[in-house]
Length: 494
Image (cartoon, rainbow, N blue to C red; front, side):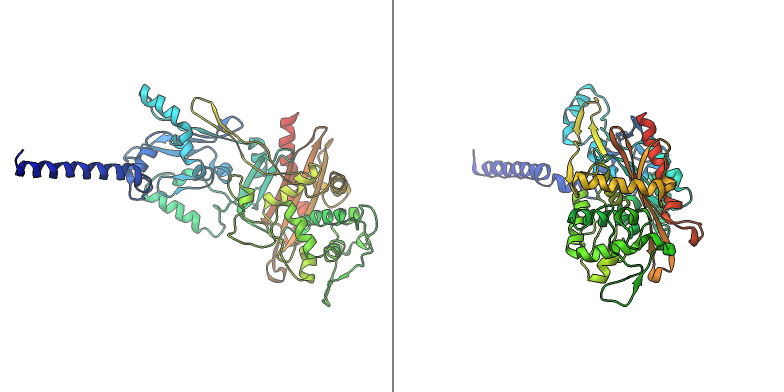
């Protein structure tokens, strides 16, 4: 070969080599970067080229897909009774993106998950349309509806879990939103999302998981648990508590609601029955901030916020906000012991408190996805219940059960009674705003028992309502909602 031809051949060879290197670089090195580039519209076109898999409740899909005309995105997400289920599903929008279960399981729902490789291969060989897998939840449809309907026009949230497994049975919010209204790609979808996002009532806030409140007197169950575990208190022994109680290191006296004479020197049982501030503030002070923090942490609280506001240890798989029992001085610790001061909790956290007591002191990790199911109905992943901690001994848990059942039978929680069923509960009315200027929060935590243990524990918080301030109390507003949720779960057990 003469010299000019050899040079041309070498040059052409280098061009081919460069092309191969560039091709392999794009396919193997830059593939993920290009795939995830927000400007790469091909990825979104492929994502919406087939229907998404569904989110399942009680064997039925609460999501769907519909064909869209006039856009290169062929399918968009639909929701059945979206306002009811949005705290569980989250949203999947062609214009906005996704959150909650829709985002966490997006590759599985679209069929792109590596665990669905076999299904994709078979579909490709047979020429069938790619299918996504289904996400099967632990939710109970009757309990969810009871929670949502029970809230009515009140602003608030409900969380219900199975104490024996940790399975989440209900997560309801008011106000709520319908994800279908902005599931498309149009400008109007964007406008509807912005209107919801800017709404001062925050309909898109997942109050059951992501909003913390002062837990008020419902936290007295945790304080009582700390007292019993310390060995310094017994359920039915008097506590030598004055009424009113002088907060430590202050000149401020703390009294009891309605100046109830039963609170003076009350036992733990009586103090829970009538929600005596004096007994539990004094107990919290005597135990000390360190011991109170230790007990709160066993139930799932943290002492402060470090490394973000979401709690990785309580991955449901949607991460809830961290519930906080503060590191604080003596007077503030006394107030935190009755659920005030800087004490903050999500409804899920307070449902966990009730669940641990109902489950004889064993706290199970909350979860709301039971299975991931492939298009061929094979179970790809199954969640196994996991123990999170044991805040109290079985003996002391049973003492707390006895006291909480007294609350419902003949105390502040009688609105939670269910005929023929053993119910334990604790009411709470938490101060809100500077110097308690705003309407208080109404709380109720509870559980119902059968001969086979407790199948449900519930926490309800009513953030605001049209009720007169003087009538706002956990026993009046929140307890009837919890009762309806427990009845719905029990109805499925009969």
